[in-house]
Length: 286
View 1 (cartoon, rainbow, N blue to C red):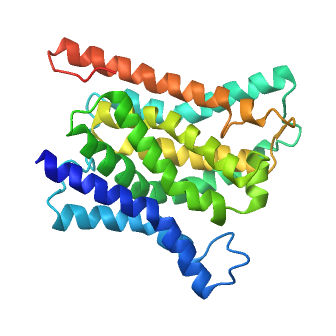
View 2 (tube, rainbow, N blue to C red; view 1 turned 135 degrees about the vertical axis):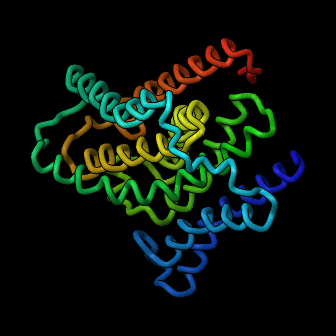
């Protein structure tokens, strides 16, 4: 069983990592190769291949559906649903307040009415999109890694690393330059490295939300709120960050921000381990 699981994880990871480059190749064949930024057929291929691979592995390669995490499992887990919904707004509020107090962030362009409309209108689309995304990263990759009895840190690194590697073609090719510079005004290569580091940090929280509930739905809600909140806040210009301070205080890729999400993830991990000790379940050391 572990051999099958390990084999399928390798197949999944390889397909995921090359999916975006297949999309780039596709666009180079059918689209103007001098400008591949933005939505395209190749970007669509990049988005759907991980999900298609997951379905094929579950149906034809022995993975099955029992560990997909589709059950909401509300009993005893409501607090984690609340945390999932509130974690991004609370961390963002802390970061923005810290930025304002230090003079690194200006919110003079923030129109709360207009931003609230954008935020609320993005929630439904984000919810639907992240059902598919979280069924891949947590419902499949995380759940399969847990079967291999790996250390927690190894699981975080693999999930975050594969998740990040999947994004590399997006950061290097598909992501519009204007959006990238609004987040972090650096080269695409440096941006990709910073973003992958951010995703590894975030993965601790997402992995632990899944582990503590054995459901993808808290992760779906957290990811939904993240997409609807921090991306438009920064990219649409509702706040501005002093030049050179983005790497520290950005609500998306800032080091301070990532450390706060990492702290949340480690808190959930600590709670999970204490629960496992109380009910005499074995746990994997860090």
